[in-house]
Length: 472
Image (cartoon, rainbow, N blue to C red; front, side, top):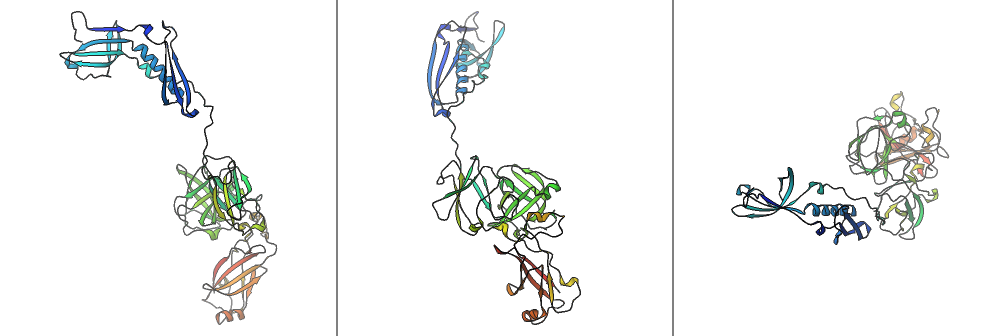
């Protein structure tokens, strides 16, 4: 310090208490209360003043934060009533207004904030007292808003799936619907109409499905055994996946539907699920083409294809068998909103009764396995059943899910159908006479025969075909 005259290093001034406020009252606006006014107050108790200062601020701020600032302003006013005036040598050129210094006074160090600097042969300084505790005050007590925050619902992500029957409580002909939205509206309504207006409520459901997309291409793999070579990498919009035991897997756990083409779904089960990024899962130890969907494998299924986890969050659409094949317009959205609201998703979907379609036959007998001479050919295969109970290993024969057992066998010449044979059993006779009519002579060693075998449904006709080439 530079003394202005002998015995005087600096001057310390303290303002009168009666000039200071006992309380501060502020009025601010609350954004969460439709910008209504909120009052906050800071008060000192044991002081010799009764002055109250009030002020209104045209700003929107949470009242808890406004109360903290009000208390800080009152504390600064009382602490700042002490001011100091002194001079410093030119060597203290680094000090500027707003810098904080400590001065020793009456045996203690006191913090002062510089408010003015006048440069001459000595630097004239004016400073006010400061206490850092004023800037560490907690916010005021929370004040809950009386106005409910508006919730805006966007258009949900809706997926309608025509799948084979996957649970006993789901009628085989009924398609499934899955929906996802954030925030979830609580209840989703499903309306339908045969035209573009006059929508009628069909059903409602209240569970958000786990819907996602393929992160990478998904290639075909083996069926009837574990696919250990492929990985199904899925980005979920919400929800989680976890690994399951083989026992749980064989019981139907961790089943997902992968859309390999528009409206065509492969059902895949995964024994192992690994979280590799937020919302991204790598599924391995796969069972492919479940419930007769082996024909739906993509080669490959491209990244971005839709994926739906098959669980109880999906709802069955309560339509009658007589309505299968009819083109409907659908609107799906929050049940609390009108069907015309912008939050409804509009889509077209034709239910085809995929759950009633017979599965493709398997294990077509190969002629080269047994010695034979050119002549009549008996074509044999094994029937599959779409009934869920058919998966029980204790059964001697898979139950017949159709009213009658019937098959069509197409004899193929490239893309041309040479002949169609019919049968009511799991075999059919392709006679030497028929072979001669089709090929000029009975089929013999070294020749090939391409076939398509269908099991028939009384309701929907031909099921999924088994396409094979027999070598003689």
